Length: 477
Ligand code: G6P
Image (cartoon, rainbow, N blue to C red; front, side, top):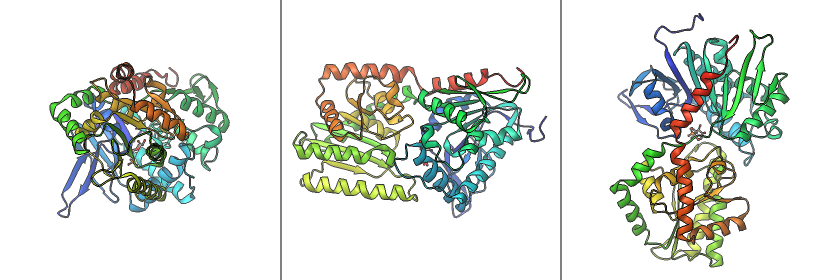
């Protein structure tokens, strides 16, 4: 038995860059935490509630050194990051090298060797923390691009574990991935897992192509074989598992009288527009916010939408504010919004309501219910859960979803009005079409969308992933 195996280890260990809570220490030295509302937290809460589980992650502030603590029966294990590591591993390598590279180089990725050193060091720390929590033969589920080296580091420490990895963002085509100076190390890091999951089939194929190009390993379909001789062999399977949301919870929330009332209030507060358009995104250059606002501004200019009878509400929640590309995007978006409101606004009415804020779920559900048209125009997106939330909230079978074909959601959500957001003329046509959709057609589309979103929820997603992981044959099996 490896010496690292703890006596009180857990059967399921989740490893993600962020803990499901944000932790802070007040001036009196008291630790407080608030639930971080991310999709992953909602996704894994039911799984964690069932298992004897631990969650390894960063508490969200630099320099915090904390002992593991329990929340709702899950052991939370904080990993410490110094402020220098937050800069180099999180803001630098994760969000200024990998993030733009993996999203089709929409923004130019920056590569620095010091960032890579920090990424390796921090990934090793996460692997050590996971190793110290997992019982003998336990399952460890590693999440996302910030932690691609963890599977291999962890296997070195604990060959007894069953290791799964899920990649929440796109996995780029070989020709783009090849730009990464440390491409071979990243591929080898991922191959430490028994199962590597992606959002779309295309992402899994891109990964297998990359494995073929940058290693000497044998691949057969989506299975990579490592080592020789039946006993020494290990298989790594790549496959698609499109993530989802807690659809029933969202549906239920949107049916509550308080949320329905709030939805009516929102329309009233906006001056009862004939057409209410909605965008909800993290303020990120992958989301196509500028393209969407530009298309909307032109529709007002062309007179195809009336500036007095139409409102676009754009929620842009603050994100990664220390990274230059995000600061630049904020300036560009705010300039554009200011121009449109300056040109087409009136006293008491702005055609764009721009909110650089985050809102609780209840308010989001009310906004979804209030909106006639939801605009999801990402230039590239692993899945896009906002599209699914909008659908789950529409138990009235009304509303329309304009959805970029460059999102993972587009593979699943038939019933959406698909657009290429780079094509501004096409996007303008799609917005106009959606805004004037015949109610029967809109109902037909929404019913189709809802069938998919309600039947394929996040619980199904995690159960499927864990079931396939449990079935991957181990060495000698
Ligand atoms: C995306 C990523 C997640 C990340 C989230 C928020 O959804 O796939 O891994 O947690 O964005 O970004 P942040 O940098 O604030 O964690």
